[in-house]
Amino acid sequence: MKIYTESELKNKAEAYCVRTERCPEEVAQKLEQWGATEEENARILAMLQQDRFIDTCRYCKAFVRDKYRFARWGRNKIIQALRMKHLPSDDISAGLEEIDDEEYSRILREVLAQKRKSVTGKTEYERAMKLLRYAVTKGYTVDEIKRYVHQVSEDEFMD
Image 1: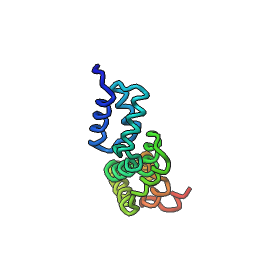
Image 2 (image 1 turned 180 degrees about the vertical axis):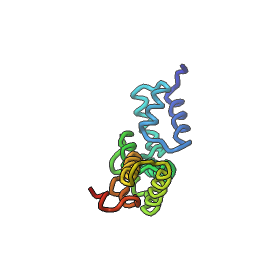
Image 3 (image 1 turned 90 degrees about the vertical axis):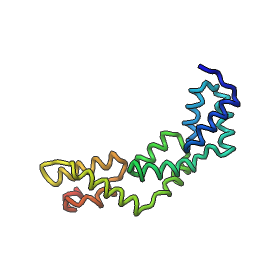
Image 4 (image 1 turned 120 degrees about the horizontal axis):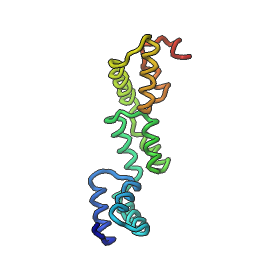
């Protein structure tokens, strides 16, 4: 394994950050893979943040936009993923503000409509419960899902 100087590590980290938004944890892991010591890692991360190669708020906003639009994740799954990256709550909240409620609702309806085609069950209630479980695993809340599952009467669903 090649030994890099701190300057080379910083240059590699800058190039890594330029390609796409990165969070501090991702960059720290990469620096560790490249052989940076803890002290070098901390100094390089501080420089990258100072030079705005890394910005946790900007990262959260980009992450939220990508995950709800392209991966079709719900808020809960997005929040969980960002928390696992040890990002500040304020930045996570700012990122969640990127969600357009109309677009989010449309995506949820599309997710449910697509899944409805492949869901089987003996009763409408059973099919609705399978849809509900599926959407919960995608990170949507039960209240959000209930609004769009049309195959079950309101009375059955409320229990």
